[in-house]
Image 1 (cartoon, rainbow, N blue to C red):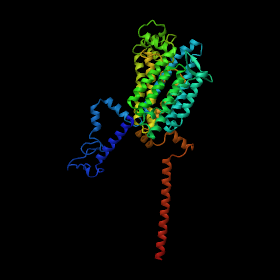
Image 2: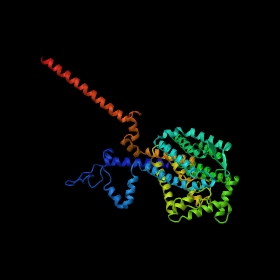
Image 3: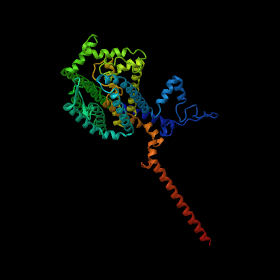
Image 4: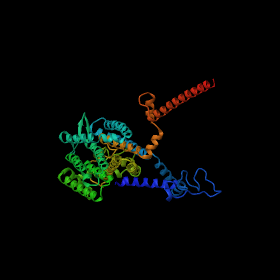
Length: 507
């Protein structure tokens, strides 16, 4: 059993056992007898006898928790205990990161557009349109049930593989890397869609195997998951895209970790993937040059091949505590290559300072906290696997990008999620976060709260306009009302018959 599901099961067992003991009548002769309140004792106002919490809870539990922690921490804990806290935490962090990303793309892309002779806001307008499309798709994904995502698993994987093959045949090669397809004048990156496809396909596959009880054998864990991941990684790596290959491997390991793969198997797979990555680096000159530049930057500042890394760190450090101001960066004017994409975090640090950079890191931390919390709470295996894999993927991608800017990791060309320019990455990331919000709505307490609240405002408006079917609860109420009227009419008719019969008897 996966540690995620085992924890939820043990929590449910403890809560149900505690309920039986508190109620004191389900255990037969061995059950604890009900406590007798001494004569003259008074029941506290709004609570249980003896100062307990309402509903038979622990005596004074809320007051003890409030007294044991600061007021701000207690209020934060209370907010996080609300049914839809995970949903709104993912939504809030996503919207804030998206707003910051649009501002930074506006600041950095203007300099690049002017440098190449394009209209000054061309890249920003494209990013803004991509963000609007991503918001619409994220909203649709957040309202969809998990079975809709499972239906898209195999078609999306097939489309991603087909797109990766087309990239190798007719794709654009920029700086020695083949990632893009030209579709109606727009650059599309199929490897970004391959990440989401791998999440859906792997989660659906492992969920089906667990339902059939086939995950007790390690071979069922790896087949056909490992060969499928190997094919996708090979197609991506043939285009010299080491960063995306690494992230696909991270998604694969995240799926196995969430499902509860044995530690020895995980260690062996990590060693195998590390060996494969080293071999791929050795046979690809472009990636080998990046690794050499990374090692040279640690020892020599005058290295020509590590120019981007050196300039990026200079820009990041020149922002100080509060930055030079939004749009006031000087490094974006030709000093930092790809300042609008891979190294946008260095310009963010220059314009918003250390405080702004820490806020961005905390927002990614909020997504990580909410994502893992959702993965622990959702009831079905597919949602748990997909939520865990999406969270690991987005957080790992952010760490790889920021680590490369800081000089802690080699430069791999991985964009910063929701912030770097790139419509394909932006839309795929927003759809994945919309799926995470949909999983948050399926948490047990969240589902109960949504059911108690009734239909949403758009559904009520659509039904008021006659554009949708009546909800079950409304149909049930209407049906019960009609049944009550029918019973009333039958009762009235019976009473009339009885009165007429009595009158006839007297006559």
